[in-house]
Image (tube, rainbow, N blue to C red; front, top):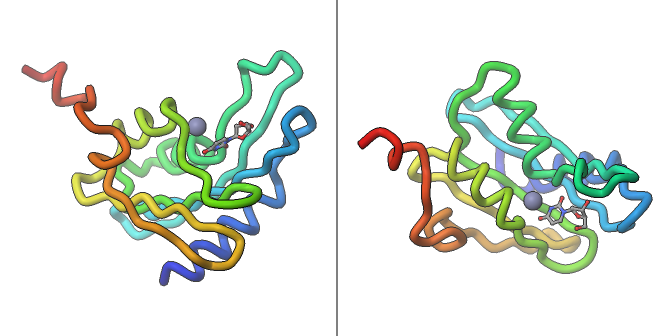
Length: 131
Ligand SMILES: O=c1ccn([C@H]2C[C@H](O)[C@@H](CO)O2)c(=O)[nH]1
Ligand SMILES: [Zn+2]
């Protein structure tokens, strides 16, 4: 699936965002190494801390369906470019292929592409526990 279609999928996922507290809606779409696609939105909670970001919703949907690695994630926020929070960067680290692309898009179909190393340098991950 091309990037434009994935961005559109993330826009559609964003429509489902449950954000009564922030009213900041985010959508995400991931492509797994098996070329399956999962999307997700942010889901907030009255107790605030149980809230989850769109990126983690999409990734956890993929993992819970038996996928193991993601090769691309697209993120669309409410206004301008929205970058993944630190927690989501760490979750991407856990499940990303080395070549994983992180694509941040705005509402005009414009997008920027990053590597995880750019967004999470000097990271800690699964390999650090295997030494
Ligand atoms: O990259 C981001 C940044 C924020 N949020 C969500 C968390 C919260 O529901 C709302 C405001 O922070 O946006 C995401 O889903 N992804
Ligand atoms: Zn996050």
